[in-house]
Each structure stands twice: as structure tokens, then as C-alpha cells.
Amino acid sequence: MKPQKNLKKAVSLLAGLTFESGATLFDAPVDTYQALVSHTARDLAPEQARNNIENIMANLLKVCMQYEDVYRRIRGDDAFWLLILSAWNANHLMQPVHIQQVISLFVGARRRFNADAQPSQNVSTLLTTILDRYIAMVDDVPSNANITQRLSGITLGALIWPEAFYSPIDVAVLGEGTIRTKLFGISPGRSAREDDLIYPHRPADADCSLYLAPVASIDHEARNHWHKPTGYKSRFYATVDEFLTYARDEFHKTGAAAKSHVVGLLNPWFFEKDALTAEAARRNDAIPNVWKKTAFRAGLMLGLSKPGKPTYPYAAEPSTRRNLQDAWIRQMVKLVEARFMIVESWTDGAVDRGQDGEKLKADSQVGADSVEA
Image (cartoon, rainbow, N blue to C red; front, side, top):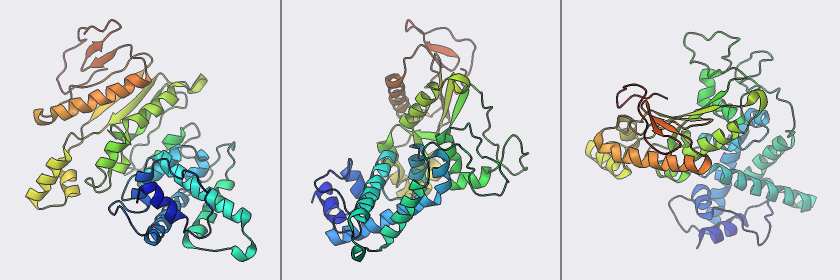
């Protein structure tokens, strides 16, 4: 049975929900099936598929409810779904936009059932109970509210944290559970303890923005490709396209919030999954352990400026991995060129490309593993 048909059959068996008849339920039925039904079995019985959907959707909604304060702070901005992607430890990664779509479909189905049901038809299941709680949360968040919400965690009086000028994606990254426990409440007005991490502070009128999530994958497909081999850790890394969307939005800001520079920290790893699998077999170790111990993450930076674009293709990757590195960077540059008009770019001190396309002389002598911009 095809994923779309299997999904429609399974959701039709869910009690307390009324989906629109004849509608295409899911824009990405294969990904949705693998995330909500099974990432291994292609054709489950409808009743088993229904049970899986009910349990997995209930878990997903609980994750959303755990981050209610972030949802309220950024008022349901798209950045919230990037947070849910990293917080929801699913067997198969859905794109953030598809997570949002699936939840919207189930919210609509629950609202439709409640509007049409007679009192005697009311049903209460694990999924409908958490759906009702989620709907109550969404309905209680005005879209035009002033930012007065601080993220919960430590009692600090009326402190707004992060400060009100931080963007929704900044708040979503800082609000993730493991990061929040390390950074909550650290601000310019409060001295950090010796064991605190450095607070990612910038003045409200700074003309440079730093994308706070590490960027490791060219796109979501590559992130999903590495999801299981990394021990389900690839969800914590952003994609180049997500960074470029952030950069575009930052450059569109005007007035005191206007930005001249946007920086992303790149942490890709230039290894083949098959080679990692073979190394794990040789070591008699789990693949995620071998990835953690041996698949070293590169340290690169992509800085976008008005005008100009520094890129760093000469990082010090060993020759055995240089081809993977170069291919990754070529893909990254194509994505940048699709979003921005490149005026010039720099590589390890040399202007890589000027307006006329010629290679210009380096400003200084630096090593092949060094960067100047």
C-alpha cells in the first residue's frame, strides 16, 4: 500500500478526529509515514498504523507542550518548529515545515470533530487529551502580544531572557533544554559564575548577527541521511539553507535593527557513511560511538556581508577527505549564490573573486589552515 493511502486509512480510524474527506493530507507522505508510522516496515495493518500514529503524535505534542514558554515568547513563529525538530527524538526526521503541517492537520481535525459532535459522541483518548491541551495553549497566545515572557527555569524576578531584541530563531536555540540549563539568566547585567558558559551577548544595535546553531548539513536530506549513524544527533545541527534563510531575514531588517554582517559557524564532517560502518565493524563498536570518536567535525565559518561573501575552501582537511570537503563547499556556495548576489569573496587572506572575476593578490601571507576576512 502506498504511504499516502496507508496514512489516510490509518488516520480515518482515529477516534475523536474528523479529517477533511478527499483532501491530500500530507505534502510529504513518505517522510510522514516513516516518522509517524514506521521507518522500517513499509506496509503495516491499518490498525497497527493507527496505534503507532496515536502514540507518536501524542509524544510529539508533549514535546511541544514542554516548550510552551518558547512558543509563547516567539508567538508560534516558524523558528519554533526548528526547536521541535531538535527536541523530538524521532526515528525519522521530518522537515520543520512538515512537522508544523502535520500538527495543524491534527488540530484542524480535532476542532472539526468538536464542532460537529453531539455530547453523547465525545471520546477521550491519549491523543485527543493532549491535543485539547495543545489547542488551549495555541488559542491563549495572541499573535500581536508584546514580549514580556521570559523563559522558565530559574527565578530571576522580572528578567526577560534572552533580551527582547533577540530574534525568534535565537530564542528557539537558547531555549532548547540542554542549552537552557547552561545559559539561562546569564546576561550583561548579571555576572556569570565561574562555571557558566559565555553568554552569547551582542548589543541591541549591533550590525552583525551570529547564527547560534552549528551548521553541518547541506540540506535536510543529508541531515536525515546521518540521523541514525550519529546516534540521532544530527537533528541538533542546522542546514546551510536554514542558515541562509536566517541571513536573508537579518539583512531585511531596517533602522536600528539593520545588519551588515551575518556569520554562521560550520561544523560538517567529511566522511562516507559506508566507511564509518566498516570502521565500526572492524572495531566491533556501535556506529554512533565510532562517529563520535573518529568523524571529526571541521571548523569553518561562512560570513555574509553587504557587500561581499568570505568562503574558506582551503581548510586543513587531510587529503583523504579533501574531495568530500570541496564537494560540500561547492554545494554550499551554490546555495549562497541562489540567495545573494556575490560581489567578492575571500579565502585565507586572498580576495578569491572580485567584480571582474579575477583572482586578486593576498593581503598577507597566512597558512593553508588559517583564515582572514
